[in-house]
Length: 317
Ligand SMILES: [Zn+2]
Picture 1 (cartoon, helix red, strand yellow):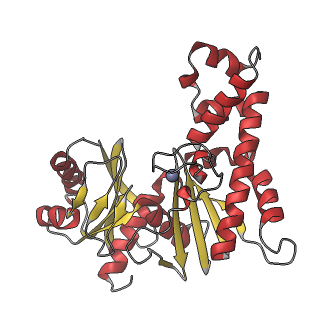
Picture 2 (cartoon, helix red, strand yellow; picture 1 turned 90 degrees about the vertical axis):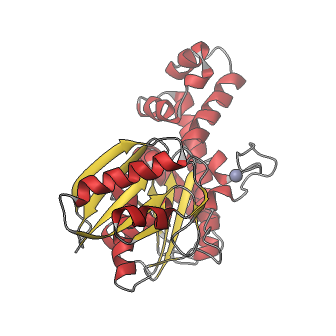
């Protein structure tokens, strides 16, 4: 039984045919258009190109946004055109296959539980660290969505009172201190507080501070740039503190660190683990969650959405 998973991101729509072992057999991709109708059409076209080549039975869409508990309606997606949109119904009518929707971090968490770093864990949390933080929680292999479909929004836990302003309207959110964006903000703060530094990052920032992306900070840290290493140490600190909060709430068996920033895990994860170990309530007297990096990379959302579509068809979830 084959299903299609579609990962709908702000820049591209990626689809794949997935088998019951989580293997991707074929893929298709288009750029993400800006209007709601054009987006629906783009999704229908990538699904159509794959279903013409394979016998598929259902489709799952992984969406960076809030999905209603019926798994058919997108309530709000900050980087996409949908607002209270009956997406599953519209796509399903055009492709003649059942369609389910899932939050992209939930989908990624499901994939890591079935096929990756959280395999078999009774309580598993996925923290996807990219531009912001996306999070998913699996209890005994089932996605926990909360009463209204929006849990868990861990990236917007307030970790620093009166801290950096966040696009959500609050200030001091975890993702303002622990993300690619945060790496960039911390590096720029460090440079502006100590002018006259002669590091690679300082020379770049002298041209245009906005050119200091999280990716550049990570690259400079790998090269031993002292400012970049301090920014990375700050990220490790806030990751560790946040993990301690997550452990206090969920007492997970495994926490999977995913997302683009996780590619730089050797630069921060051991430090974060240490801070987590020292900060969690009952430190030294309780079993600790295993903190692991994701195994499925960019494909996790797509594979998880395809897996969920199969589960729903089989009466699971
Ligand atoms: Zn926020």
